Length: 67
Image 1 (cartoon, one colour):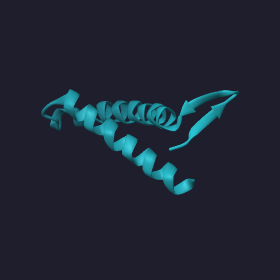
Image 2 (cartoon, rainbow, N blue to C red):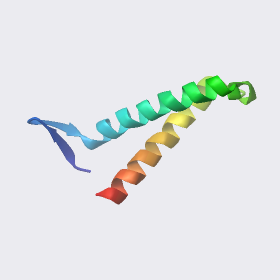
Image 3 (cartoon, rainbow, N blue to C red):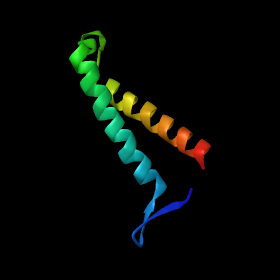
């Protein structure tokens, strides 16, 4: 796992991927809320955590294929 150089500051790649996954998660949560799909979910905080982990796994997988 490499570090990313942001103007001389080395940032762990996982931190950048986690922030990107968080932004994707925010969009998905708003979309799910707008469509009313949360009424089908038993435990919303647990669902949101799992959704974030799936987003993070997708971002990391995509990033590893691109590099």
